Image 1 (tube, one colour):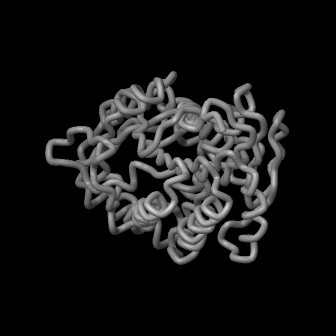
Image 2 (cartoon, rainbow, N blue to C red):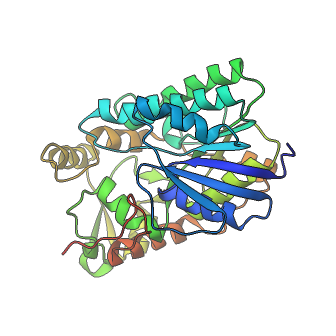
Length: 345
């Protein structure tokens, strides 16, 4: 197989935030012959060169069909992930960890030449004192208090073993910052703020003050830019991990400027208490463990992706967040189960 061309790419989690952007990017690329998108629910999207199959990676009984789907693949991109229910980490483990292991086993059995895995900034250990950006060599032990970060870190260890045992497969690990686009806004609102949070409230005239706490600093990337990096990694002879993020770093000052709100310092403990109360009452899906993880995420240095993939984000982090906020207010969404648009209020 010539790494610059691919006859067939299989994408798990193809109806999610990254998946919908990636299958569109691959469908447009003449170097890709066909794409098979795997998801728990068939979407309404009709794209040239893209086929869809329903498959639940959390079910052991679906493993034989998974093996059939990847048997003739030139590359597999593993994106499938469940963020919730955050009250039931056993349920997310079944999909995120056991499901990923089933994908890796199928790739190994079929001797698929390329495996690209969706890792995350959440896989990294807390950053260094002073907040300097970290390279891909930074430890990936995650934050122990959240299922999301534990699972991402665990899969890094699984892939370490996979690479040792299956050197014939070129393995790439993508470690992006937070990924946003307008078409995923409704789905992400449901994930982080809860099903009943009215997106129309996210308006500058209704948010005169913005709570700012120690550790409120993170990176963002437009999902389409992340998909472009995935596409490039598929078509270039590269291995290993790639950090992905756009500038500038998002902090209280940047958020305040975007929302027309004045940042007001509040204790992080008070914000955590509010998050914990909303989570316990099942008013919000984001757990206090996720809040702790956010405060400890390192910043990402992205030189390797720019150098080896020839990648450059087209949108700034502010533009990506603005697209997301437009989508939240409008109830925007793609024609898939995870991203379907829906307004509350």
